Length: 214
Image 1 (cartoon, helix red, strand yellow):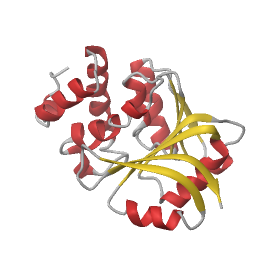
Image 2 (spheres, helix red, strand yellow):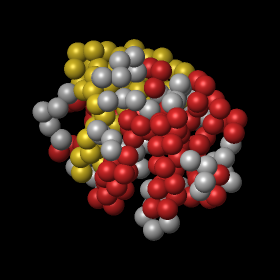
Image 3 (cartoon, helix red, strand yellow):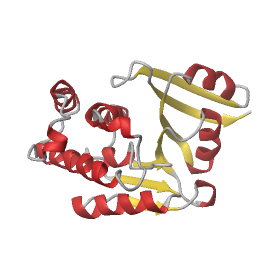
């Protein structure tokens, strides 16, 4: 696992230990997470999947940032939709860490090609869909996630048709979270909880329940 020097030299051992100890990652999952980072680094050289600066410490900026969602997913058999998944963040990380029914949706063919490559190499059960969210119909999920896709009001618009009665929304948001909440409350009724990100002091894990349009 640590043989790849390009990944090894970027290792943040404090972050690695936090991931392993806090989120109960087993050795097989740890290996897959490193393989994912290796493929991401290689693929990103010719196809823009993530910002180059985020690969300076990918364990923190991608793995820790995404896996911190997992404690809010109480049932690993829950159906999960990751909207605008991009490089599979957070959905692919959740799948590697033990979530069994993850669906990744993105409209970018190059990004979906990367997701299919990783899925095949790691024998994941993840479902991958190349489609715009607006064109995806007749599917409902227990949990909906997203990272860096759109502002909160837009995420609510996307989410609404995929929701069951008790669907939980888990969004990774940045420093504008309060402004986005204030804007969303003008058009939507919802309950929310904010949890401070453990990967970035500017970040927030936003938990949304009981979403309804005003």
